[in-house]
Amino acid sequence: MKSLAELEAIRKATLSKINLRTEEKGETTRIVIGMATCGIAAGARPVMLSFVDEVQKRQLNHVTVSQTGCVGMCRLEPMVDVYVPGQEKVTYVHVKPEMVPRIVAEHVVNGRPVQEYTIGAAEDK
Amino acid sequence: MKEIALHLLDIVQNSVRAGASQVEIAFLLGEDRMLEMRVKDDGCGMSPEFVAEVTSPFVTTRTTRKIGLGIPLLLQNTMASGGNVHIDSEVGKGTVITALWQTSSIDCLPLGDLASTMASLVMGNPDKPEFSLICRSPQGEMTFSTREVRAVLGEDVSLAEPDVVRWIQESIQEEIEPILGGIMR
Image (cartoon, rainbow over the protein chains, first blue to last red):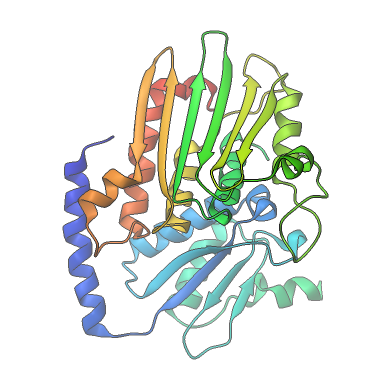
């Protein structure tokens, strides 16, 4: 395995971030990506890693990225649900890595969902 | 699926749902350019009857609907290159899935982004199971294990932390390139 010394540095940096998180006591925003056979085949893996990158770049300590299975709307994959505390869940469909920075900036950070990427907009077409 | 690594991501979900606490992944590329992907778990296992019919798209343990495509798609893709899938399973002990591809075939899928698949697996399952990876070819060998990562991180830092996920992806990528780089793209 690659140098574990680097990992040790990551551990220290993360521990101080975790402390900050508990001090700030903000509520957590959750980003959940569909990663069943349908999601994976449609391109969910790069989408998930783009969310991880974006969260890391912006140092968003109150945001978690996780995975879920198939919700039965395979034709709309890759699908991403964003749960901002105090707001209704927003479902994005046909998500591509290029769309991720905008979803994070406008929705996760500023609280305004990107309407044109949502399931509502896709179903109206 | 466009990559062998995407099949891996998909097939390991079965191990996770089978309640595995250890998933051992191996990619072995021989002199004859045959690639073996082996996924061994200690999950709940399958009965011989279930193994016999699991390659059918109309068999699944899922109760929400009656079809599952993971193993049928894997079988189809290996066979296109002249390979095959072998399933060895025992109830209560676990399952070993072995998939073979003939990488010299024009119809063989590229290995693809194995490092991203490993990062996604760890990210999605940060607490359980433990994952190990071994890649071997005539060019050399590499190993990775979440146990070792966990030992350094301790109890307070999750493997799903973005910085950790990124490190896992980069370190695996760096190490498999010289070993399996020839079949990645």
